[in-house]
Amino acid sequence: MRDDDSRWTDANGQIIDEDHRGLVYDIRTLIDRRRALGIFGGVALTSLLAACGAKSEADAAATPSSSGSASESATPTPSASATAEASVPLDEVPDETGGPYPGDGSNGVNVLDDSGIVRSDIRSSFGSSTTRAQGVPLTIALTVRDAATGAALAGRGVYLWHCDREGRYSLYSQGVENENYLRGVQETDANGTVRFTSIYPACYSGRWPHIHFEVYEDVATAVASGPIVKTSQLALPDETNAVVYATSGYEQSVRNAAQISLQSDNVFGDDGGIHQIATMSGSASSGYTASLTIGV
Image (cartoon, rainbow, N blue to C red):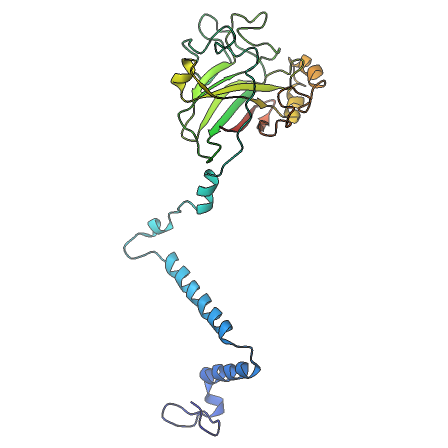
């Protein structure tokens, strides 16, 4: 403490020599000086104490409790941002025509009720023919989500089809009327995703390179040609098209692709296919994966 003559004394009233006043003296002197200058106010002190308290709470939270093991305390929990991201609404994919070659019974032949249509590898015909479509390998990954909530839709039925390397559709085009390759149905998994093993489709005259799909409430509804939840198309990006069409067997696609654009396409032209362009990975030699999230 300090007496009336501004001398510092200890608890017994003994004067503390200046050389031995130590830390207490230094701190008190500093505080007195700060007060005199008017810059060490209550707000700053309160902030300092709050920061110290926050650090103490953080340290306590990081220290394993005596009732739990260290491994339990270190177990990560899903963050609020990760949870929110999984449930963020997304744009609904536009409804598009199924085209003239759906094979779903709406235009002649119906392949959906055929045994063998539920499959992941759609490169070969099934049933009476085993003809295999040739071309650059392509995996097609479609993820179905609720557009309003972003939630993954598990257990949905997805029917997918597209043309072959020559631009022909099985069941319809001349020379492949008795084939049913490049068509298949699958059920979405817990993440709302289906994966089809296929080949890269051609670019035929008048259309941008694309893949058709229909989403059903479940596989049972799909194979019974029941109500369709969503009919749309996936657009393949220009950069990948150029690489694939430079490979053997796609020669006619080079000419056709040069005469069409996303903007001039009669399906994707309204918005340039912004909600339908696939995300690509891979290469022409090892095969590509085309991924698209579908809001329904």
